[in-house]
Length: 399
Image (cartoon, rainbow, N blue to C red; front, side, top):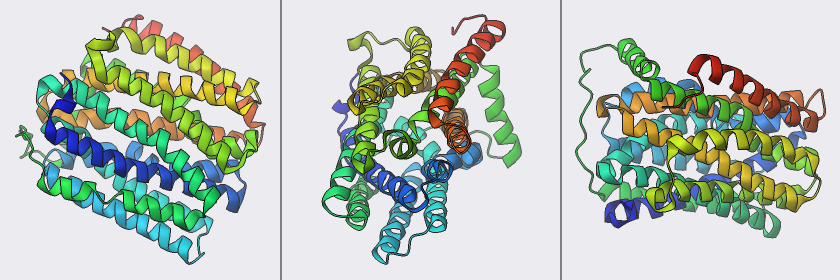
């Protein structure tokens, strides 16, 4: 069923899209400002990926607490914190006091809050819609993220071109606001609380990991997300470095390739979100999409034309998102409510943690060898490793 028919979800969908739009405008501004200050492939990649690294590192720890939180209050308080960090980024630029340290510190701080918010966001969807709408809601929630990923960079590039980074950060700040009153007043469904109230923190964390490892379909999905994150998405998330080092195209080129990736991701999200209407079946699609993502990622560096490269980023964004959302959908349908936050946060860890490692590996390699060379080697190595492990560990079967 289409989750947009649910009025509560519709309001959340619209305002959350605006909030995510602000996140992407801010991210593009921070990434480009870092490149202008440092002209370093590693440090630009580091700051750009700082928003995602904490989710990969600390996600499972936050998820243990998230299962016991009131989802409405947690979402509200964390979104307010995200707004406050964004205000600091804007104010520092207003004073013209930003340095590499300030950008790294504020990005890591924002990343920590986002890491805490991520398991809350994943569980929150299951409280907004009934189970029969869950698959659609997961896809549409991802579509919200990726729609902002298309529009946000375009707006950011236009704002930087016509105005300045201070104005860019201020507009991003305003986009965070509409979601806050919606979180205060929206009506939610009842959710089963964790039955592990008497168990200590460590036991709850370990049990979530055991469920993920001992459930075959979940374990396989996590492996697919790991490979997708490190060998495909890692390259997609260091676009300020690619725009500055390879394309030499300025903020306008950065906005174009980031929007192109978002467009592909949006199309993938819609494909998953519409489900049966488009013939999407996650268990049949995500493996071919992963292989296709490897190939397209390797092809990008063979072209110099910005528009051809942008098209390839569309395709790469489509494949990477289809693998990510398809695997999350399979996990959502498999896991019990009492373990949902802890298991889904392992999905986040595989996704955000390994895309961070992949992106940092590319950025670090770019300090010593041509970035083009590193971007060819990475996906080709991914194909080889995946084929070996998938054959000998999983017998070439997802289900």
